[in-house]
Length: 150
Image 1 (cartoon, rainbow, N blue to C red):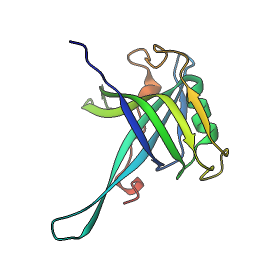
Image 2: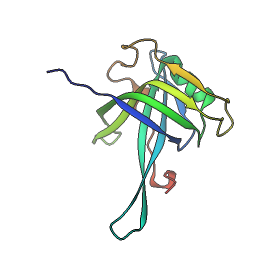
Image 3: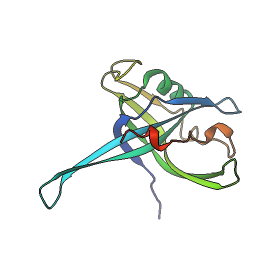
Image 4: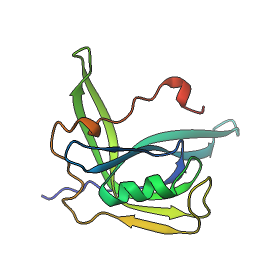
């Protein structure tokens, strides 16, 4: 039986994208997107929960994200979930789960300093999002509790 790993996220950037270049010259952008869920509990109280998603974008698409996206901007992400591990400077094994985007659509106005209108960046093909194992710049930036806006 075949399996599917497909994710769709519509949310707002929590910070400006960070752009890096791997040792092979490939661009990679990392940023977080917040999605919100609201409901009414059994007592009739309105509740809301924010979920944060780590997004990784490769290649030319990463460069477009850095140029046109900024904190607060609404984006539609299509991609796949990936969990990977690495060793930190102290030799401890670390894990992260992220969404590797293969389609990023810029929704609405600029929401910040970059770009305007609606734009779209796509990957160059299905295999362009896979970076060789051990690429130093592929490790996402650490996010401290103080960086999370809630």
